[in-house]
Image 1 (cartoon, rainbow, N blue to C red):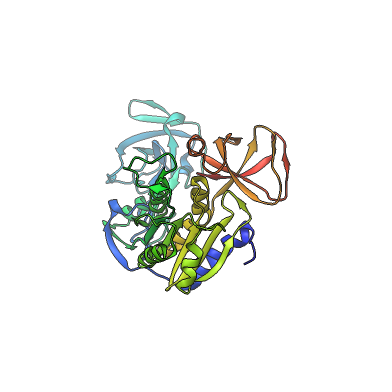
Image 2: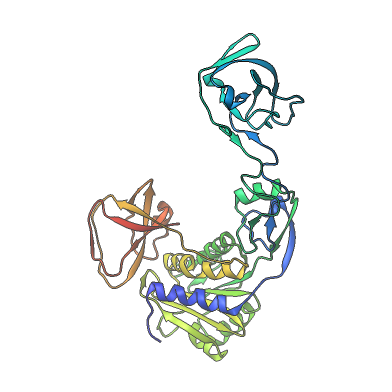
Length: 395
């Protein structure tokens, strides 16, 4: 199969998963459990927001036509209260932020611009009607669509759901993602490895990434480097909504993942991408389920999950989109790489500046732990100087 560019490979994942038209079942959850879930219903304003003309400053509610001047203070109104009378010419009501405007008043003079003496207040300000007032319905009129099905419920959305009277909310069920680590050299985390062995860290980090992406992780037993045993575990993993494997996708004698999938009649969309880390990378579909075969080195596994598999999980969660959020930052030092590959390299992002982290290749987990981002190095640009802008992907 042809080796794809990073952009083409990601576009392939988005296209194929979208075209599959998968939509998870809907469930109802308490609002406190809805954070970061995918909304399965449209939400509209149940009343005007705000439901009254609201003061946005502490001060005095007056008539703009009377300014500047001295006013008789006839009372006060706090948030949650209603002033029972009407503001007339030459009168003022002390008002707090968030309180409803009294009848007759059409602006608020900030307390900082007033001089109070006994039961009178004086100001030299000139204002127009509506100053320091949020008019009724300025945020949304009753019935206005506010949140659409398929959007992720972040903390502002939690506030909006609460303010529109949703103690429970309809969300899409989290997709089940099976995780299968492969390799004779791998042992479980609670085992003591021999000198030539390593613990199964990939399955644990992938489970954390799956759950952060909105999925439910299911870790399968380790697959040895034999095709029949790997194939049997793949079939087990295909019972989930998505299967993610690590290891066994290169061209070595014991890399049996692709042959195992081929024996199951899998359709392959790509098996190599021009990126580092993670060039050998398989994406396909078998028995109606999508799968990713990620490289086995930890950094390769983590990076390729973030830029490819995460998008698939988000779409399988019912999300309408799965953007890759990149920002630009200034390099703090010169940087050189061999062109030809798009590289995702560990870095530390601090405000608007980014510094590469020295690392020893795609097995260097300690260096990854020092980083909070990945520099995205252009495949066509060999040299960068200090101060150059470079795309950055948060870790």
